[in-house]
Image 1 (tube, rainbow, N blue to C red):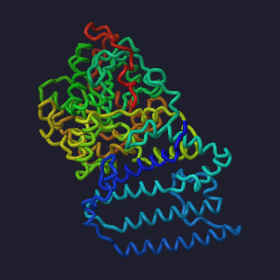
Image 2 (cartoon, helix red, strand yellow; image 1 turned 120 degrees about the horizontal axis):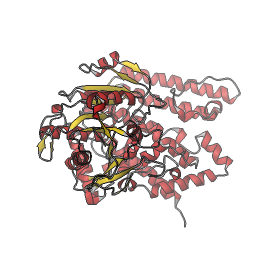
Image 3 (cartoon, rainbow, N blue to C red; image 1 turned 90 degrees about the horizontal axis):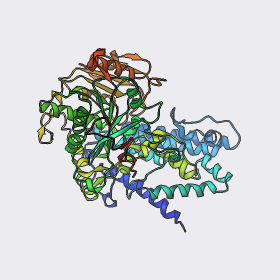
Image 4 (cartoon, helix red, strand yellow; image 1 turned 45 degrees about the vertical axis):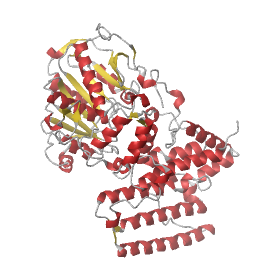
Length: 587
């Protein structure tokens, strides 16, 4: 079989260019080629250039360039030379020794850094009336600067160049083979970039191995009940709602990192929703359906199986969003079926969406909406690419260099395998979710959103709520999670801020406790005030949650009962062993 590698390479850069062009023309993902040439985004006409600042930046740049050429001349003649400019601390792109010791590569690196900083300074010289436009342009400029880094090229990266020479070009051949393989599994508009060696991971064998059974299923979810490991369990069961844009097993990666296994070991009867990976046949499933046929329906099954009137509900990310809507729906219906609510890195107030908001705008939404309706679903590969580009120098370009330029296979890493296990979103759900959240921020408006025909008011939720945010979260900013927490004005709340990010801050086992957390019982003030008065705690937040859970729905040994064996309920026998079949479907 002959392979036109030139064509595949062009496809890669066409996909990236299409994606970035969409952002430049004001937002959404991904774009058609006819997006180019659209009018300047609204708000830019209100910009004002500070000419004094701009001229100062330009003169400073020219001075640094002169210094760099003089330094280059000395180095080429064997003289000593100090760097004119250095990369920021933590920038791993230029770790190879030749970037500093080889005069040519040092010059290339420093020229790039000077040019990058000139562009950044030039944008800094522009004053915007609309901060969101300024933030978006800074994001776009960062994407451009990082895309044109010399580290991303074959001949200007000393490590890549050296590898090609040492392997007699075999690394280039392997890199093109890797690129071809990734393009074959990509969608038309989004590159599915291999981030880990997938050969060592099998869902149900090396991942998602906590014993249990699927005891119920419908079109959009399977419900897993986990087998007990203690003789006595807390009477109140736990129902976990993971995000439906990912697979649930991030909470059950392996024995050491499994939050599910830890909860079972603590004496909880744990149930987990496992979402379907939908195709066009489920295009009609709405945001409301994902509430009513997700946690609402699962909660009734859990109550039937356990015989308990109340269930403690746990939601992660968008799973926390629909868990909150579930709690508000039950309140509106007069059903007192929740013992407590736990929200992990969850948004309800979308007024501060962070960099995720740069991918959406009113101007391009109609076209993106039509594309999703035509397909029947939002492609999970496009969603994953968008999230990867939020941390492009950690989650995108290093793999371009490693896989395509060096011709290597990335190391095995369970979280990155999970990150690459993409999930589609039904068209109707995707559209309703974005319109109610990122585009119009309706969830915090009483009655603005209806679930199954019932107006929803999250401020009516009055069960105890535990809210966890993570300090380095780039998807759900911790300040935004705090602001969302304040929308639950009728509930007694404990807010905890963990270190690290959206994944590592949550999946932080009690044993080892790599990251600490902060606590402060006073949630009446601003996020900044809360942080300033918070106490720093060592270790994982898991024990803190356990102590809170015991206080709110298991205050004494009287709330213990004999362990519940899976499949013992006549109406809910085992349908198949955990992790079930829905989670195994890959894009």
